[in-house]
Image 1 (cartoon, helix red, strand yellow):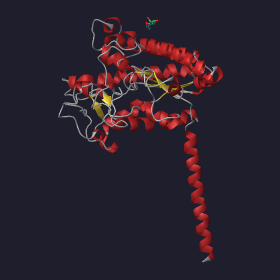
Image 2 (cartoon, protein in one colour; image 1 turned 180 degrees about the vertical axis):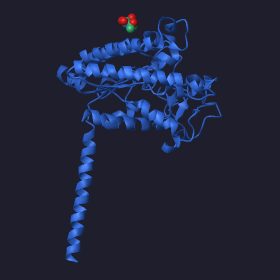
Image 3 (cartoon, rainbow, N blue to C red; image 1 turned 90 degrees about the vertical axis):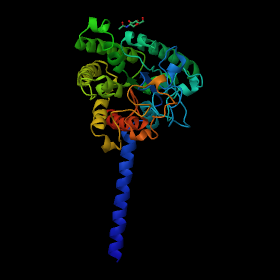
Image 4 (tube, rainbow, N blue to C red; image 1 turned 60 degrees about the horizontal axis):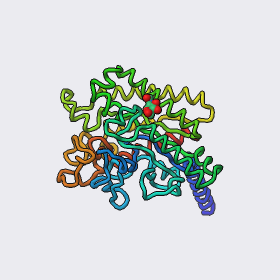
Amino acid sequence: MQMNMGYTYTALWVLLLTKLLVAVSQSQGLPKVPAVIVFGDSSVDSGNNNKIATVLKSNFSPYGRDFDGGRPTGRFGNGRVPPDFISEAMGPKPNVPAYLDPMYTIEDFATGVCFASAGTGYDNKTASVLNVMPLWKEVEYYKEYQARLRAYLGVEKANEIIREAMYLVSLGTNDFLENYYVFPAGRRSQFTVAQYEDFLVGIAENFIRELYALGARKISLTGLVPIGCLPLERLVNIFGHHGCNQEYNNVALSFNKKLDNMVCRLNRELTQITLFTTKAYEIVNDIIKNPSKYGFEVVEKACCSTGTFEMSYLCSDKNPLTCTDASKYVFWDAFHPTEKTNRIVTDYILRKMAETLR
Ligand SMILES: *[C@@H]1O[C@H](CO)[C@@H](O)[C@H](O)[C@H]1NC(C)=O
């Protein structure tokens, strides 16, 4: 009896210690950062386009239907976007506010801020298609933010936040789908697709160098996901029987490889940088190929309206066809994932980040 009790106690202690060790190592996998700072397009915009003279907006329902209180914020989805989940896991707050949103002040932005603009790309010409913020303009606002932060917190504290923050960069899709493949007389007459990839990666490199010169150290680059499988691209893939557009997916893969090479090179050259790509392609591709594995029922069509072409103002609250449970859908509108997809993708990204940042 006594022996058994002793054995049981020992086993319980071992179990408890193991659990504690696992918990400690899990929480140590991801460093805490004082702020999450975001650049990019609609995949990460949390409402900057609300304040821009463009038709590309989403600050009306049913967008934001599943956001905190059912609020349409200008995020392109039914709920939160990846930077929100990343900020919740590593940063001080669960959502990243848009820099142009007048509801927030520098006090809010000190713990995380988003400069992204839906519809933009690496290429200036992409931003001009729908009159949104080009990447250089996002950087201008970031510089203004730095000045405001220093005025608010003092130079030393502000510089610490700038240095320790996690920077998220997510764009590139629109350069191909809203620009290159849409206007035969534009970039397509100047560049082959391989040359255009090189052109974009060159802009990405200059952008990273500029962020580094401005004090950024931890930078995550989201490459392209399988852009040929977005519902809108399936719709127009008439000769491919509305399957994924393989050419576009191949472009995404080849662009990602070039991005990876550039990242490798900059990591060697810029001694204090921790730069990495998130490999979001892999997880999104797996979700699209095996939707039921993740609890999804629909992948070809989006939740909003007919689910084939609607986004922004065409994704209307009046439409009776909009699905009632977005968590069964991989895509929310013809171009953007649901909150559930964003959460799964972010969990995957966070695991990769934990490996890189350890
Ligand atoms: C984009 O436009 C800005 C502002 O006019 C300019 O400074 C920058 O060089 C342009 N970028 C490219 C790659 O042409």
